[in-house]
Length: 113
Image (cartoon, rainbow, N blue to C red; front, side, top):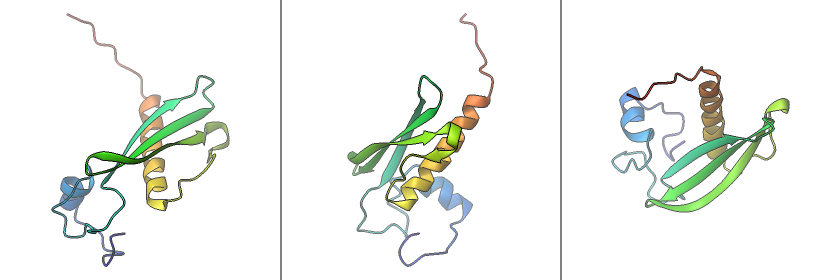
């Protein structure tokens, strides 16, 4: 989605080293003018288990510039509202998928020694 590079698929090494954690200032595709450098996510499931709140923070220069909550209604498999930026929305969807997958796995308890 980088301007001038639409449709170009980055190499796996570029994705791992530059795209995965944000702040990829050495990436040749990084636009000089951009709203944010990184988007961070967190999630929690409502007490009734019906809704997952996906919280996001968009950062620029290591400072928050936008934040909010996207609610996913699990029983209906739908978002209450979509983020206006399709890239942030897609990242939220990927984060939610990973979050839900982690919650399915049995938790292993480790005894303190």
